[in-house]
Image (cartoon, helix red, strand yellow):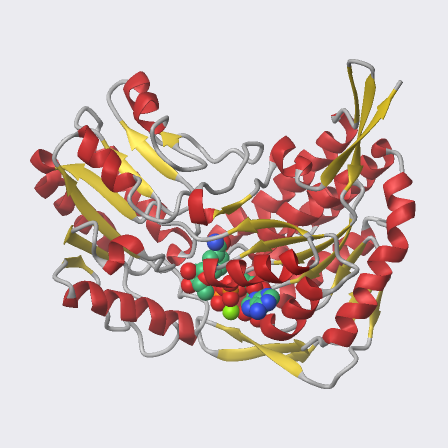
Length: 462
Ligand code: NAP
Ligand code: MG
């Protein structure tokens, strides 16, 4: 147990304004592993002022130099990859191998991608008698969740810095330690004072103060749709720009021509990964009625293998919430084929890998984001029925289509109301725009589209 001190503001760790702290708990054994300061509106104000003070200098820094700082940041993160993985494992509970392969490796790749983009992006273009300059939006407020704690921070900080913006980050209260490690990495990479600032604290206090602050030009939020809606309303008051990455209830559509066993196994792995705490997880599996029983059996067998492999969910509240959804699924008439609401261990916030069959589109577990290791398998009659079900939620973040023929899968994917679709198991691409249709969000992260979120245009006519 360690008492971590200070907020990273203006290029140094400074004492917090108040005395309150947040306890960081290891979800595997429920032990308090550390405390961090709970920031207040005063800390937020100091951080926003630091970011505003640093803005003119960073915005005027040549993109090649910003790129060099981002490359240095990537190198520092890469050198500290083991420490990152161990930290995420301690505060999120993710198995160490998964932390290494995903929680550490993905943000390093994303930081690297923005080092390259900053160096190559055309910050100036010509159209007719105009020269269009792509200028930084200004001071960014980033509010991030705990599910991929470093990735969510880097997916905002790297493009913001590449664009020439300065930033204040309020990380999730459950995972502040990797955010602190990131602040140290920023410092080591020689990023100028005030360009990046970190305020740990509670959402309704520090997060709220940051979203409201008049010195902020853009609020970039990732988390629940409920909080996202609230933040968008707060930001609208001052006509701030907002970027929202919200929830999902993505469909994994297995067409009759697909390799059923592969589609089901990859689909189950996708949901169980990170204990189901992935906004883009394919939590609804759609199977043709003629293949339904076979798919259910395959999924039950596959899920059983995850019992000892997956980590806990992040905290007691999340565990209770996920178990509540499992109970609701049973009450509404879905059939349990793996797992269930009982906690599999007496210590730690574990939830059994759970698979439901006979799920109908109107059920709560087919509509709401559960954010735990819970898969719902739905039956469809024909392609039109599958499309109706796939598009039949308020969300539209991700999805998958499997078919014998790639063109058939692509034709179906083009009709889905969602921001990403993986064709026959296509791999995650850190350069592809990530973001939601419908209530899954506003704007896009990653790659060149993610960079554009942090830029605004100025046209000069000649
Ligand atoms: P959340 O409350 O939306 O948290 C996301 C971030 O917003 C955290 O940093 C949080 O701070 C902050 N926040 C909360 N209330 C705020 C407010 N009034 N003003 C400004 N910032 C505020 O998400 P959660 O409670 O951690 O998880 C709840 C559900 O959200 C999950 O079960 C899941 O369905 C969904 N979720 C989605 C994603 C995603 O990537 N789409 C990620 C995480 C969760 P605190 O950490 O102090 O709460
Ligand atoms: Mg919360």
